[in-house]
Image 1 (cartoon, rainbow, N blue to C red):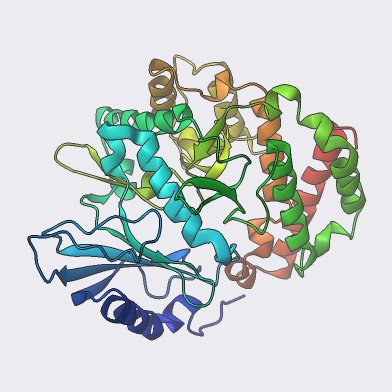
Image 2: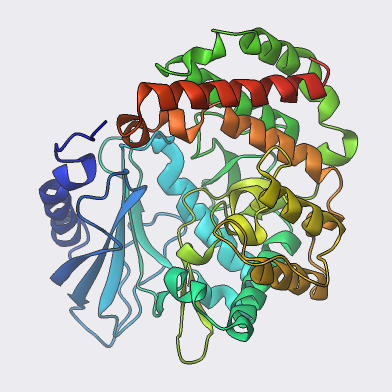
Length: 429
């Protein structure tokens, strides 16, 4: 079935967004933009962007002095003297995130990440100059323009020793996030916000409408329930009510989840979770192979040292797969738990075996928690798999659905139904 040729939601808002950026820069911030250019934007891209990002060339009225435009909002710093370029990020309302909190959550996470990385590495995280939540209007963040070029495509064709240099630096970043002591003012799990004195406080998640949560179990439970609620309104999934899956799921949530979240799992060390720490959110210097920026903290939140192994690090390299995926991925699951074999399988489109082993080695050498050292991580993998399976991409994404035949959709629904039934049987429901 051919996709509709109508203008997508990204392109439809181009004119409005440029006018909005100009209005904020000139009217609210009193900055003089010379050039505004989209960053990482592709016209006709079929999926909604999380954010719309613009690079802006500016001239400061007095280039020899710092300029503060942060309107006394917490988490803001002055624009340094001599600055000629900044970035402004606009939240995309087309995504089903918690827009009321996501801007402040990202600003607080950026600030906390700089704290966690310390003097040596905090230069990797952009400073925030101004921001406004999406309470009555478009949410936005004005932040530092970071040097370097995108890593994603270059990483794929790098020599092994160059990939190792990059992965080692990524491990350093993750290690700082794991080691950082979450302030006691952040009493729960979930998103972040600022208090009246600028301190960090617990807040609802940006990923879904819920939180903060008193326990890690409560966060995991809400994640699963949220996906089940969304599935209720999907025309193909229909809340999984066309089989025994729905009643068994409800029974599992009522009686099984607490039992499944063992004491060791619920007691995992609290940590700042980036939520999308991978090569597509990193910039680097091509000559020195040094990372120059860690970007996009839109999904950041406070959870545990295990969470980034499910939400970040890239499929086929550092993301810990569940055994309910295919055989090739299952081999990576075993290797990450029990050690990589001396003779690695050949790289393929699902697993970069050399990079995956290099990543594991980098974590081990730095004594950073990794799947083989995190208690009950296989159980956590199952629960993350469950939350994803409840709202399958191939059944719920409008672009994918519009390009699928009814028979393909029925077949995929049958496959996921069988997988969910097996999950429930494995846990006694």
